[in-house]
Image (cartoon, rainbow, N blue to C red; front, side):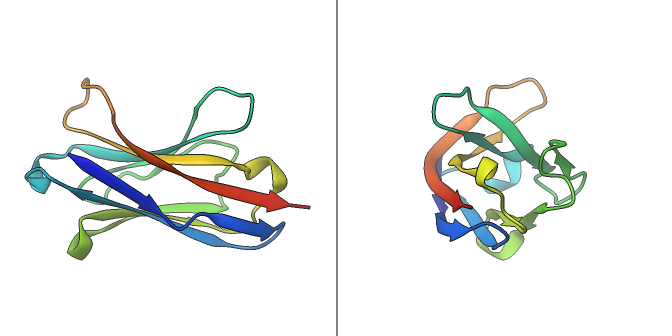
Length: 118
């Protein structure tokens, strides 16, 4: 399985960015869930949002709720993260991940850097 994340960049506070994570290398239908995590400088990796592979049951960390939207892009076997009203504290390397079951380890993609200036 390969996960390719893209869409990071440097923006000012209040701006928007859209991250995308494209999955390949496995029978896509067998994925269970996808998620985004992030790791800020000097901090541990933290959960951001997740969604079932069928596009249902989006879930968000409190820190991004009402600002970020996770969605499945079925035609591209991808998972997007729309980030609005970005804040400096959103600055981090964002990682996408998938899993093939409810109790199986995350499969990680490479990160994409998001930098938000005040």
